[in-house]
Length: 226
Ligand code: SAH
Image 1 (cartoon, rainbow, N blue to C red):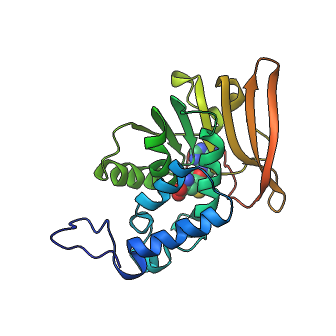
Image 2 (spheres, protein in one colour):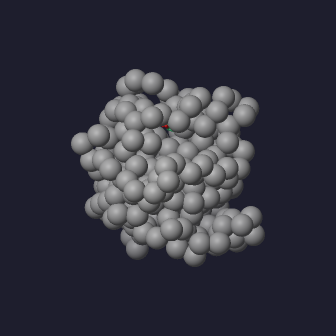
Image 3 (cartoon, rainbow, N blue to C red):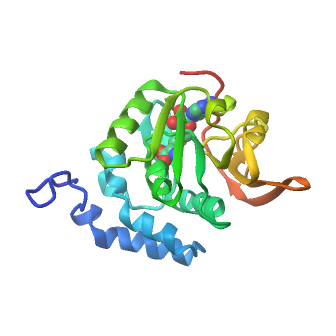
């Protein structure tokens, strides 16, 4: 339960299954699974994941699993959020970052303090509104939100030093590669259900370099606004 008390009016600290101790166990698990970046682990420690999901699921907030957030969508598994964030930032702090698939905003909350400015797009209006409200009330000042289709990227703000996509298309959308700045990194799942790989694409002086990170299971990237 997200208990609200006088000293913790928004229930951020949590109690019992949502307490700091429970969160610390998740950090230990991710660290043992190969998440080495201290700044990323610190974000997992700091962000109250239980506030991003339905209260009925709060006791499961610090399990390392994906959970439903409504509209057939899920909050990503913490290990995958941490891995993608680490893959995006390990070359240095990216100034401008585009996130596709805001969902409940958990990945945005992990990422925002690790980048200069975060631009996040979600195609389902109700999820987009709820995430905007939640992140604004938690005090994130460097995030801009858009209800739109991530296949198109965010042309008015391009180029980006980093792009992170939280849903899987069959092929990497060309607009996203086009909106990658020199040295920029795109971290995303790609492929059909059952055969999705997480890749990192880097724009180098010799063109786009592709790295395989691991096999994953994401919801599909769907074309058009919902
Ligand atoms: N990062 C999110 C994960 C959300 S799941 C979190 O931490 O909760 C992926 C999200 O991508 C869903 O909310 C889905 O609606 C959204 N999505 C799917 N296709 C999209 C598209 N073309 N443009 C923008 N968002 C999209």
